[in-house]
Length: 144
Image (cartoon, rainbow, N blue to C red; front, top):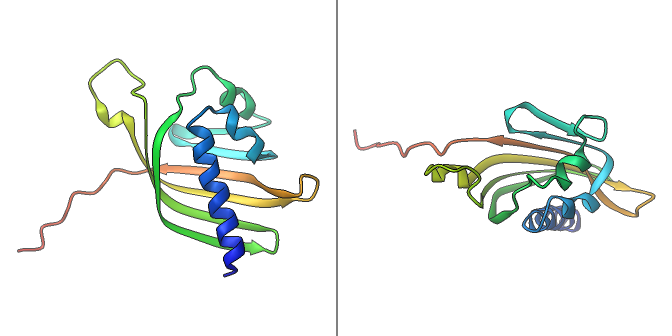
């Protein structure tokens, strides 16, 4: 694997999380016009959906992330000008409901994003992103 490609894609993905610590709108410069995003609870968002990707990212309902940690990162080249990144993330954001369930503040997911070099923009742009949430499995007691 080309270490330059690995580092470039990892850096871009990291920059998207940092952008989302500010606002959803801060993510838009990283997204290609044909980007598709798949979120938990069956949400598919793109430029063609209603609401569209820009509407969702600029919504006042967007809650910025407070912190995040990426682990188990893999970058897979898909050709000379594109790559897939997959990883686990543990992220937290401001509590978004009016109850005492703090688990809603923590988000654990398997993430995958596809990046493609845009010849017009002259840089890599995100063309696909998917989040698959998971619960942390309890530790197995192997003393038996």
